[in-house]
Length: 219
Image 1 (cartoon, rainbow, N blue to C red):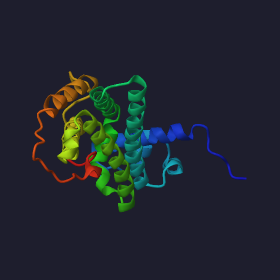
Image 2: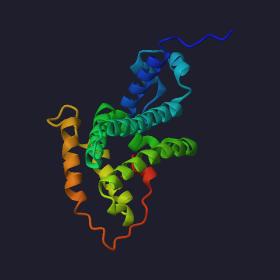
Image 3: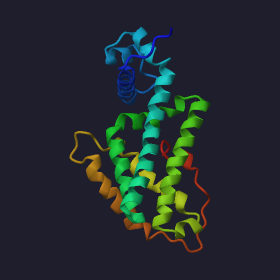
Image 4: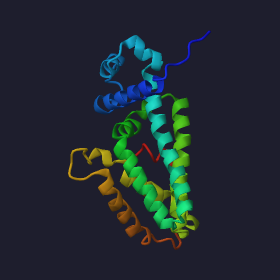
């Protein structure tokens, strides 16, 4: 009879992914060994391989867990927006705030997604991009709800990319021990975005659809 998983399996695996993300973020994926991951987790290397097949699976799981968290967040904001009767602007502001907070909690994971995803195989990258596309489409739809004219002008996807450009790269300058936090920067991002959203000219504008599936990890 096959032995079932220990009750602590998921918690231990999550700890391994967290430690691996910290190392990958600090040293890069190529510069980190499985020996270092095992040492950081205070487990033997054979024990480490009980939880993950290899270093590639570590990277894939770090990235996928992060983008799935963002997808879940989008769904939660949608439910909350409907339940509370939020206006389109309120819903989009909430979406921006929740994303910034998630990035603050997962700075290592987000850095790994943006910098090391290129080391994944084509199948894993395609799976991640499919999830990312859903997330970006949700943002684009929220932006259209706030300013419908952007869709007719085919500017809703480019404007979405500009928004992600503001929030995706905060980890490069917003330090955990700095004067500003992700919570304090979130309303600044929303204010900047909405301050400019109404100024975008839509008359006689026609922009090609942007490739949304790259928005979460490509500058």
